[in-house]
Length: 106
Image (cartoon, rainbow, N blue to C red; front, side, top):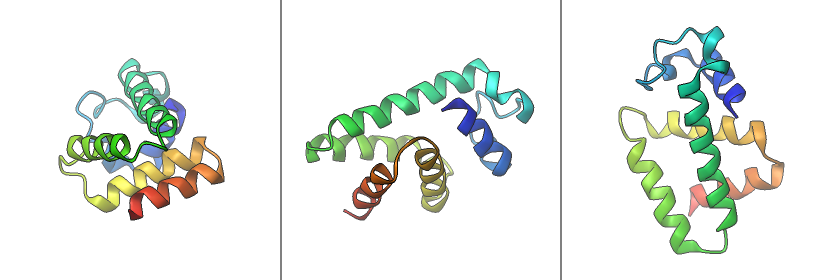
C-alpha cells in the first residue's frame, strides 16, 4: 500500500502537499517514510473494514461519511475519487473496483 501511495504522489505531486505529516518528504524517500507507512496502514484498515462489512449498509454509510468528513480539508470530490480509485485499483481485484462504484453511486 505505501508503495502505491508513493507512486500516487509521484504521479500527482500536488496532492502530497495536503498531507502535513509528509508534505515535505522528497518523493524518492516516500516509500520508506514512517509517517506515510502509518497512513497507508490506516487506509488499509479502512478498506478492510469496508470489505468486511459490505453486508451492513448502516456501517458502510457511517464509515464512508466519516472518511468524507476527514478528507474534506481542501480536497475536491474529484481529487478524492481519483485518489481512492487509484489506490483501490492498485491493490484490489476488478470485483472490488465494481463494488466501490456501487457504493459511490448509492
